[in-house]
Structure formats: structure tokens, C-alpha cells
Picture 1 (cartoon, rainbow, N blue to C red):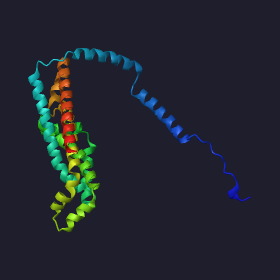
Picture 2 (cartoon, helix red, strand yellow):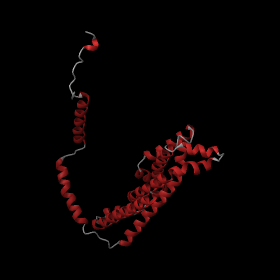
Picture 3 (cartoon, rainbow, N blue to C red):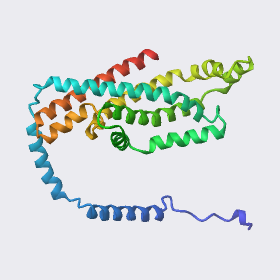
Picture 4 (cartoon, rainbow, N blue to C red):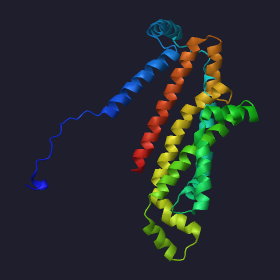
Length: 264
């Protein structure tokens, strides 16, 4: 009888994967070890629930008596978010085009991608602290920090969107003898314009949220008012600020959703 006629050995239908089992055991062991090192215990969590309940009780009812201070901080946060978004998009558009590997040579796209990676590598709060040290307290530091954050996010998405375009349309425009700017305006941007607008709206939503946080480190906006209220143990005013921030974010989400729907 030939080797081909010999029956193949039967294999278990659900053979154990010992490598994954060992990896799972090691992961569980590490989680237990990390929990002990960080002093994570059920007792502390239960105690924290009680303290959290008392803290929430002091936040209600919210106090809107100082609505002028609240409104001033909210308007400053909106201004910071809008300015940072506009500046970030204006700077991200050429950076995204230069970072696209189907349009720019490697010696251009490589360094630009490295710069974008640097902008994305640092959290915006850390960038805000650096700008506060360099520029001083106030909205300027917040605008600068969120502009850097916008560049890191939007320019990367711009570059990826440009790399997905059809080059046939680009080559058709080039074949007419059009200039490089005309190729971008007629061959590239029409294919990605709607996505660019979507990226900009998403970044505006993100900057509205982030503008409330950079104020905690002194970069202007409602975050500074919130931090000051916490330091004064003025928790009913803290509740009013948080409710206002949530209302602002929900309103921005509603408006941006309507704009996206109108563009479809």
C-alpha cells in the first residue's frame, strides 16, 4: 500500500492552544501584581463610594447666581476652541498635502510626517503647560496648545484622505498643462473636500471639550473658573459649570450633526 493510501492521523477538533493559555495565566498574574503595587483594594473603593455620594450631595442643587462669571468663562472657551480649530485647519491643509506620499516626494513627506508625529505624541495638557510657562497665563497659551493638537490630528487625517484619492483625475488635470496649484484645486481637493469639512467639524467638537481642560493649567477658558471653584469648595457652583459644559458640548454635537447631514 502506498503512502498516499495510508489514513492520516486524526486530530482533535478543539486542540488546546497552550501558548495562549500560558499567556492568559501570565496576564492574570501581572494584573494581580499590578493591583497590589498600586494599592488597589475593594475596601478603598467602597469607602470612595461613600465619599463620592457625600460629594455629589454637596453639588446639588446647582448655583447659577454667578452666571456672569460662568458666561464669561464659557465664551472664552468657545473663542479658544474656534480660533485653535481655524488655525489648526489652515496649517494642517498644506501639511497634509506635503505628507501625502502619492503627491510629495519622500524627502518632503518623511520630515513632514515626523513633525506631525511630534505634534501627536504629546498630550494637549502637557503642551498647554509648556505654553503657559512660555507665554504666561491666559487664552493665548490655550489657543497655541489646541492649535498644536489640531495640527497633529487633522493633518494626519488629511494626508491619509489624500493618499486614498484616485490619481486618474489628477493625471487628467496634469495632462492639460495645468500648474501645480491648479492640479491641487481641480484634481485633489474636489475628491476630499467633504471629508476635510467632516474632519474640521470633529476637531471643533474636540477642541470645545479640550478648551475646558486646558484652563485648569492656566490656559484660559471655563476650566480656570472650574478649578477655582473646586479650590474654594464651592461645589454647587461646580455643578452649574459642569451642567453648562455638558449643554455646550451637546449643542455643538447637534449643530455639527446638522451640518454633516446637509452635506450628504
